Image (tube, rainbow, N blue to C red; front, top):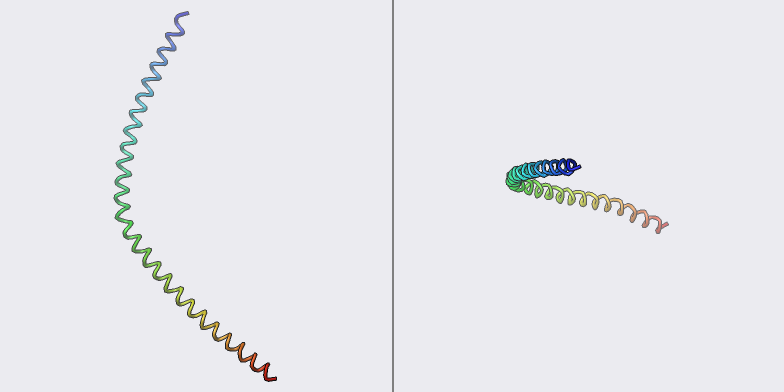
Length: 94
C-alpha cells in the first residue's frame, strides 16, 4: 500500500523538473525575441522618417487637387447659374 504514494512523489518530482526546464527555455526564448524586436524597432525608426515625408507629399497633392476641383466646380456653377439668370430675365420680360 505504500507503493502508490512513492509513485506519485516520483511523478510529481519529474513534473516539477520538466516545468523548471520548460520555464528556463521560455525565458531564453523571450530574451531572444526581445533582442529581435529591439532591432526591428530601431529599423522602423529610420523608416518612419521616410514615411513621414511621403505622407507630407501626399497631403500636399491632396490639398492641391482639392483646390483644383473646387475651382472647376465653381466655374461650372457660375456657367449654369448665369444661364438660369438669363432665363429668368427672359421670362420676366414676356
